[in-house]
Length: 522
Image (tube, rainbow, N blue to C red; front, side):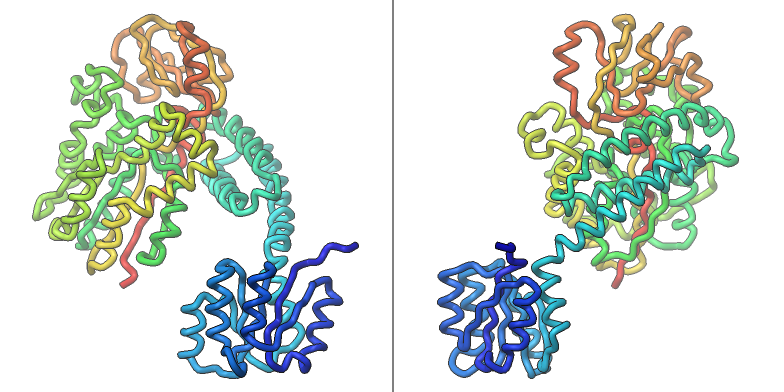
């Protein structure tokens, strides 16, 4: 017996006049039951589950809206299409308030009814088929592009397309294409690592023909806004990937007009390097000359390495001859309680010409997932990690801040991040002395050694504009989804950090970052 395309209940006190429509749907594979009044319809819905209900608004006895309420009480998720002669706006609002799924005006024709059936009963299947077809075309186009000598602009385009498809496939897990996308992303990161290895030294040597880097963010995206005379809020969300931003963008688009551009993080893609470079507009080697104490603390003491951000920004504005009155504000949010206090007072900061706000929660989420089996269970892959980001942001003080700022005139928000993160799946053994650093996606020390395919080797730090730290110091920077493990307790740490979100290396997820401009819609 051929499987039905869906089970439909059609409720109308003149159902006999609609028999041609009913037969039309049955001929196309739908199973259609009918009722001539609301009482019988509610009883039928109580006894059996229907995939779609067509409901006449004007019926004797129990009316359409009352019947709708009865159906929704029993089956709140069943889609209901209301059919009526009445085009009054108030009726439409009442029906929408009771969660109708669609609205058709009499006289209806077969094509309208068929369209509603396809939308609610076959829409996912039809959309999925179209998504599969489009993705296969995209897959072939991206694979073909990898054969070319790609520019940084093309790499940005490829990465944004991959991210877009990742989010599209989140909506269609039944297609079974996620692994294909993951495999292609890994293939792209292999080529991207080679691209960065080839180009990076030229990028840090001259600004000509290179992408915007961390050192360019304030000059290129913040200072022009200050010159417009508005109150500028500059948000830096630590460790925010592009896909996580796009989740947030969906929620913010109701409140703001949003535009975005992209820049590349410097290497290593880690806070002491990339965020200091943003606020100072200087490479790490230049900062070493001016602030030698910056690199004397332990690399694990991240707060100590970013304690000068406010001073870096003040000095940068001074070098650019930009005088702001009142003086710029700087806020770093490290915990939820302080975040709530900033949310409650953020309106008062609009008096300043520039307010810089660093938000650390996403970075804490990434590191927390590495150490927590519970968070790994909640967010086992990129798709779930995006979902977790959405849940956090929806209830966060950061979202509350944005909603407050959306109600304020003459405010512009520039939002970015210092680096992204990558799901690290392959460990690589590293040899070095006991003074070498402990970071998982980059290391510095004397005579560091690891397998060539896993890392970029930096023998002369100054060529990469990195701090020398000592005469014999060299760096390694992880490529693709590798992470570094020392031989001591190798298997323990290999297993502990496998499938964790890390940063510091050279991958699309860590390096290609959004810079967002938002203006309140009001």
